Image (cartoon, rainbow, N blue to C red; front, top):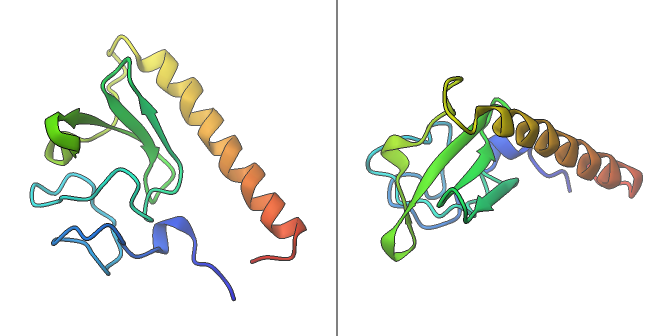
Length: 114
């Protein structure tokens, strides 16, 4: 059985806005998706930044703040601006997340999975 690419996976976290649908928008104010939604298979939770970094459906790095009660600030999610103090670190993290995705994809291929 062939697994769809991450950006083609359906939301599985019971968000009333996205559950069961492809998730191509991450800053929808009605979103209640968890950070572990199937549409974000490669996510890095960063305690120091009080948020999470993940690759979107186009492979770009996004940041989302964590809110109290285990919620995520999806309406304000987005790219880290080039003038932000953490921009240089975000470039390194983005490159490493891409490397992880490539490594995992090649391991699946080596095992005969699609």
